[in-house]
Length: 305
Image (cartoon, rainbow, N blue to C red):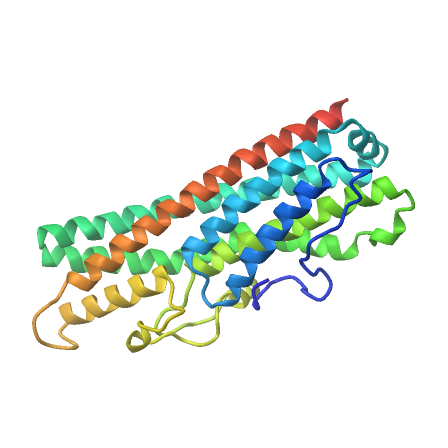
């Protein structure tokens, strides 16, 4: 769990669950997948998270959803879900819609970010200094806008978190089989919110000077400390931060702030690294989206039966 979580970590701790194998034949698989994702989340304590780590978190989360698919499609679990249709299925379907919307919004923003990075690389390769300056400026402007766009797509998750806080406690379910189903669904929902939050955090590292205005959620996701360019070499700087620092430095050179000849090599390397990382996130989100779609189909099938 990242320190800047926008839901109450003390109320909803992320942990592995223990499901009796006699009741749930695939319980060990789910528990193993939960442990993998939780272990990955520990690395998110670094600020900001590395994009490669977030990509691995998305891929592992997709693996968890594959296990959950088998779990909810078992006859005994489907019977338990149908008995609590109003309490569980409708809520699970709403959650799947919110997760899909967030996933699609993130994919669109990543595609646009990649286009800006590729435009910069093309200008750098051609040595077109005037175009380089305009492309870097456009990239930096888009990054600021991207924070606001991410805050909008995360609002449904914030609403979901509030509903989870007001929903019945696990102890309110007397049936043991039902308790296990509810526990799995809630754990998966919490960990999905956390992974999406980490994705946003990894992409919205602050600028040299950060103004935390607007909606309060995004300000919780962004660190209050700034990351000056001279600290670019810090060990925990991620790909977005390193590229941002290199491009800001390049822009300052064009504007004559630092003086001397313009050196584009660092900007080339950092932008190439960022593009590779973005492509990795796109792979993770694509895997995640396929699993979310299948999960929603399964839930709707239970609802209509």
